[in-house]
Amino acid sequence: MVKPKRLLGLLLRLIAFGATLAAVIIMATSREKGSFFALSYEAKYSDTPAFKYFVIANAIVTVYGFLALFVPSESPLWRLVLALDLVFTMLLISSISAALAVAQVGKKGNSSAGWLPVCGQVTKYCNQVTGALVAGFIAIITYIILLLYSIYTFLNSLLGKTPCRLSSPGI
Image (tube, rainbow, N blue to C red; front, top):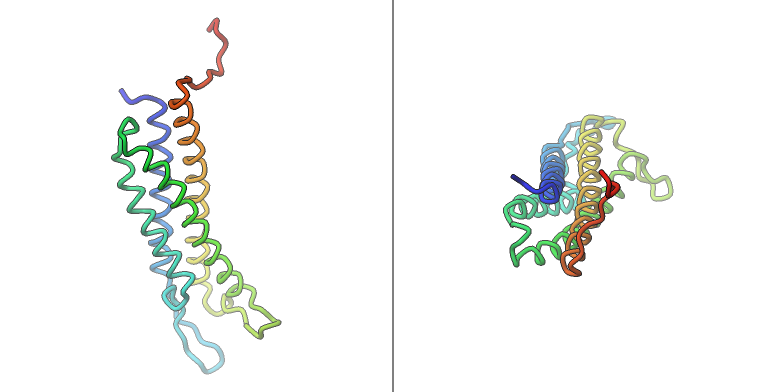
């Protein structure tokens, strides 16, 4: 039988894996043709370096998340997994920050710089980018919870303490 502690960690890792995979797929398939007056153009994620960074970072974390599913918590590699969780959480945060800044300019434009919003012409593309960013936020929140949980369990095992119980001793 699987320990509840291990089950929670596994569940969090599966959610994080699914969210990063969804972010990659949604962003990588975002593409739409639009027109502005007589000009025709195609909006796709690969035209924007920040969106490419978002896809690459999420793809790296997806592969890592898949591999981390198979590392037992009793393994000596678990300390490396804990350190890599921190590194990849920061990678996800930086990638979504860059992508979110570009998406904001695409949606609202920048009147000071003379940049017009493009989401009015390519709404399907903007909706897909929004979906990818939502999946990215879910991944980040999950990785932060996973990181806090991993640190908690690691420190408890290091100090020889058992996690506190919320039930009363008489039950």
